[in-house]
Each structure stands twice: as C-alpha cells, then as structure tokens.
Length: 65
Image 1 (tube, helix red, strand yellow):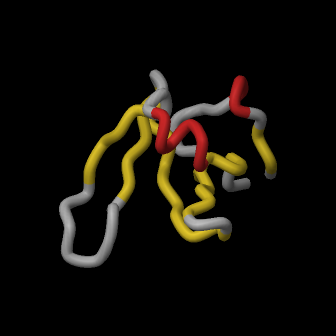
Image 2 (spheres, helix red, strand yellow):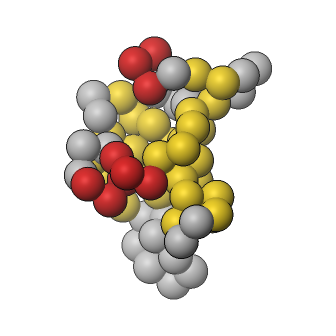
Image 3 (cartoon, one colour):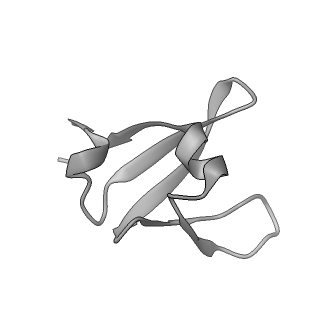
C-alpha cells in the first residue's frame, strides 16, 4: 500500500531511483532514518533520509499489508 512521506512508519519499504531507474530499496526505521545494504559486499548501514542523496532519490514508500 502506498504511503506518503509524511505518514511513514517504522517498517515501511522505501524505493529509490539511482541513475534514473528504481534500483535501491531500504526500510524506514522512524525518526527520519533508514536501514539499507549499500551494495554487495558492503556493510548494512543506517542513514538519514534528510541527507541530500536519499532525500532526492526517494521515489515512493510502501507499507506491507
């Protein structure tokens, strides 16, 4: 189910556009933070959605039913 950025809750799935196509997914943790695996072989990390990269790349959020 689609979720607006103002209604996101912990556990929502975030979809990001990298180089013009949806190619990255993260999980919203709440308090403006997300967890994601940057790429194969790199460490899973927690990032801020307020950083320019993630703020600009976010294309939608969804909530599992």
